Length: 294
Image (cartoon, rainbow, N blue to C red; front, side, top):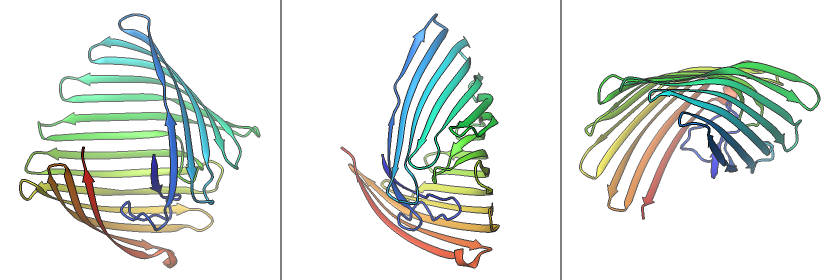
């Protein structure tokens, strides 16, 4: 895949803006896996992933990952599945120090009736750099969804683990979100509140943010549809200089879908209000896109 990404969460622009604070990344991901069944309900899953990211910007170093995974999976019933998982990752940055990551987790996939689904995974991960520096953290994944009605679904997501930022820095991250989604032919709507904490392992830097998002979509005619979205985020970056930022954004689009062609015209507004005046800005983006399906 080839995409435009933001290399630093502290200096961001909207997804609709492909120029400001963005760089191009070429990402290659190869992910073969093999399932070896011992019985009809018990199996071993072996997987390997080769992942490489090449950034056009010289300020962001390229990174290569070799990931091996082993999972023992047991189906206790049609609604319950448990697993024991081990993952070994070799991280090879282009310039900085290489390191190994090992992760041990236990997982549960549970379907509570026709409306409730729970995915739960917990364990711990260790990091060991070639120089001998090491670190560890507990890991959690909680993904719960409940369908209140045919049209309305609520979901809760929490994750805690090591991760690699777009600037290829190793971090300890905690992320949580609570979302509502409503879907009918006459109206689709979703709302989400979110919270995120990022601790940079080899830097004296901590990021924290929280906020909310709203999206509305409804048809104006058989072929014409409009979308509206809004977002508010407040963030704190504690580094050599502390910075507090409030971000506001809103956008609207019109989409015309006829036969093989989808044409969309969108406008997005974004305001960045920072405690460092040099980082204040307003952004106006107009996007025209045409998609052809064959």
